[in-house]
Length: 428
Figure 1 (cartoon, rainbow, N blue to C red):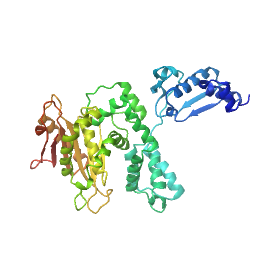
Figure 2 (figure 1 turned 90 degrees about the vertical axis):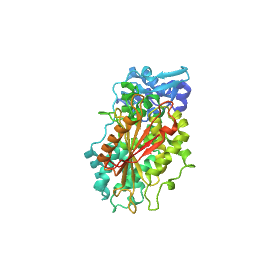
Figure 3 (figure 1 turned 135 degrees about the vertical axis):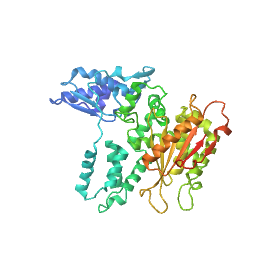
């Protein structure tokens, strides 16, 4: 049986059966079983997605003579996680009922470090261009083996970066760092899809407590499984971001509007000293003024008691630090803190050459634990993290959001005591 023309198919079939009829004709025209891949299936929305899934279900019983033997749906989400709005049904439909013939779900695994080296070694073998050892380490640190990110970083440094086009010049760690920033700022497709997931309540139920470092927020095992399937959270072990690039993308995405509003009101030059160094103490003092004046509207917008204040801080830091330095983050549930490291180039040196590191630890005063107890615990945690990442100074930012607390009680700063670790405490 030959294929009917597209026009004839559309004329002879109802709109919601054209795909199924086309696949039937295709299968009947060739005696070999047909295996069909649908890439980016979850880019379909609403009734269109439901229609495709239902036609695949209807055709299932006709395989392999009159329908594909196997259909593989490729996307960011498992098909059981699609919850779409159907105008025909007049509400949301869970596609588990529209597509109940799924055999198996598979997730593309991450590369091992050796697999990453083998992949990048193919480029070296073909072009002669080397990757410096530190560049390889940095790619691994930033991606934790995520295949798309490894490929994207390597392509950026080897084919988009002007210096990287010179095959006689090895790829450096600095070039990898620039490539990371480019991918994030350009919101390339993969990162954009993950950022869009942040609009989903089941994603925010897991991600916002991670940003806060809290563990009191309820989220279900199903929520956690979902964000792990999306690749946002590590597939095993403690609840943590999959890799540093995702850890950077998520708060940037959540604070995009705030950063845009800051552009006309806060300037990086206010906090950069004549020798090019960053005055982080002046920056945090400026943040105290900003938070006191603007926090109420932003906390309502972020909708999370503990993550909200820290996201306001992240947005302020992005505006300043990204002008010449970088911020790295570490989040985890159940540790009661959120760790940030501000890295800034030393005078006369590039950022990649032993930058000056300062830790910023964020804590929220709880209803049961008082201010002084929170500060005491925070100082201990900050000192530990400073030692871990070889930071030269630390800052503990304590948000006291308890009701009936006046601003004059909440806003303060304390310099380190003699003989104590160099940690400044900032109250808000």
